[in-house]
Length: 154
Image 1 (cartoon, rainbow, N blue to C red):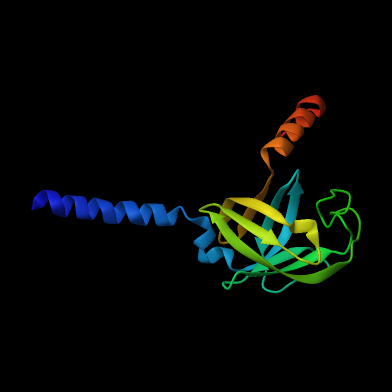
Image 2: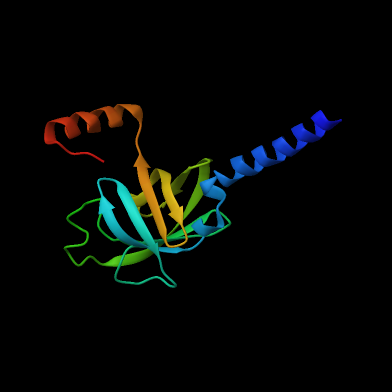
């Protein structure tokens, strides 16, 4: 009897711990985020109350919808020369997001592919969100080769 109660208590704590590691289900994700910093495919966002029309950002909704304030250029703000040095024009785009794993999400904007892809949530706290773009194995291999020759790291 004591053994079964101990196992029950341990399993409750284990399930609670596993659930707490699920960043994609965290209600903190469901906010409006303003792009603060862009490093080689690592996007750092800070919370904001409403979209600033002059800066890029994302708003995640519970129903799997995402609204993006993205650049009109073909590269969006993946191109470091577009952000923050040049004054780009941003437009509002609707898209969708879905959970890929406990720490990864897939984002799709049908009419603007600048933020399409799979992203790992490397940091999610009340005021900051960090997304790291995930690439396929062959693309990662090419990027690693470029990083070694150009001495680039992330």
